[in-house]
Image (cartoon, rainbow over the protein chains, first blue to last red):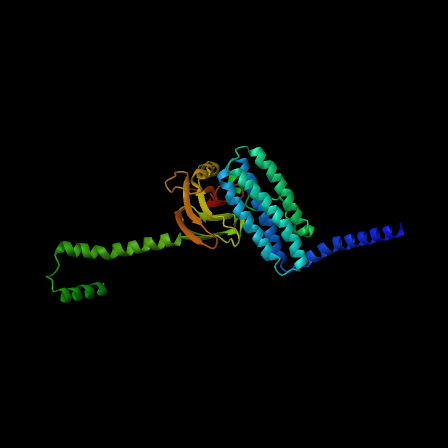
Length: 156
Length: 168
């Protein structure tokens, strides 16, 4: 009984240390600006996916997927000098996210129902947010924050 | 005056022509003032020339700056630079008459964002640029007002747009 408690206590301690270690590690990123840019690009392209689906512009969706892989590469480049353990964590989740967006792209060639694609998009966003969770909160882009140019031309 | 005479006399000797007729003399005497007048006109139009520079905000869907200003009637030389590094998205710069952005953008969806220069709603267009490319366009600034500009790549205009302020 005592040994079980000990094991549980050690496991809890390890979990606690790891939970603390990830943000600390991320806070000391070697190229913070590049990381922020790459994360913002992932959100931007994800929003573009959504826009093309909503507008039923399905032919553009594979192009958005290509851009998503380019944004993913930008993230990989931005963390290339980080410790292997951190890179592996990011890579695992990033692969899952890229696969989720690829699924939308594949579906778009035959699907004509925006709702189905939007349901897949919601799953893909969840996968993308799992990547963001590995970075400190102030690195994570706000998906609802519009870029600076938004809406100006439409005001006139 | 002395200079003109010297030039004429030199021309005679080189070409070996007969002396000028009255008509030629009249045309010749008018040529210099007309030329000088022409030069003056050219100089005044050059004074109205404006160089504007605009770029994409790196790979983000925004222009930097997103507001430009020029005087009405100015000859505008606009340079657009695609400052992206990572994404293969193409960008351009399209200036349209007020309230025409949405309609022009909608039509451009059918042509992958390519805008016809014959479109009467369009004032000026910089062709599509790949990342790192720079292109130019030239146009005469229209009547005073606020003219929207945007990127016509499908889906970009909602975020990637701005205003050209044309002043008196």
